Length: 76
Ligand SMILES: [Zn+2]
Image (cartoon, rainbow, N blue to C red; front, top):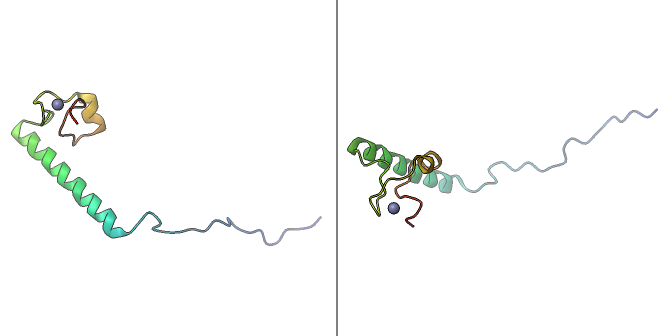
């Protein structure tokens, strides 16, 4: 019986922040925040859930997936 004393742990190189630089991430978050604030403004104005392009209603299931959607799925 041979005891394996040193078993290599993992072996995978852990690279923190390998997803890109924090500035890009923060810029993306700021853009998303803008969208959220715009959606809240539309909620106040009573235009939330209305397509910006055709003026038609944005389906609720679409809003569930994209709560900040400005347009209905048929408008590009
Ligand atoms: Zn539309």
